[in-house]
Length: 228
Image (cartoon, rainbow, N blue to C red):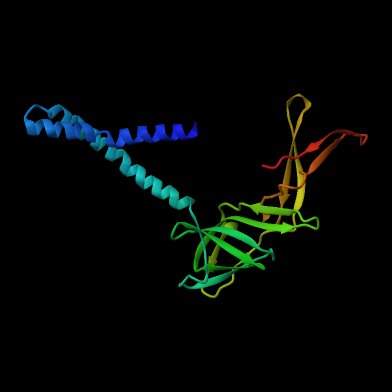
């Protein structure tokens, strides 16, 4: 079913952007035979200019969007320019997604033992992610998205070593918001270094739970938080 829908969409797009060739070719044949074709020529020309007018800006927009979304893995061994070292406070293995503010492209930096190599430039840290295994063999993922602001920016100079504070220790808290009809909404908040909001999850572990107590200490409600 999805294949048929995709084929149908491609067919519609092809007709919209290439269909103008049909009346144009027919009109040229008719003009050559002197059997008319002026109207079809006008229709084909108008259709063609409209298609080109839409396709041109569309192609430019697609290129800009794809460039902003694409992430390149930075490989210090194959890079020929000057580099620096980013010191990540989390001493394990982690990844940083940074945006080069001058070149407007995104890079993935791999940190090992809290050290990541980076090209010289000014960057905005978009995300950080780390994996760690607990004593039960369960792998956990911790991540954050610093976003904009000076706290998420860093400048890497040749031979320099800027420090990026991120990761544990983590502090969990529950945000309770009163709702209508005596109800309440619970939201699990996890904070860590840098003052960022973190997400911690594992596909194999049970989600963290909560208990609601009345004034006498009796459990009146319990449940699990959901990831996402």
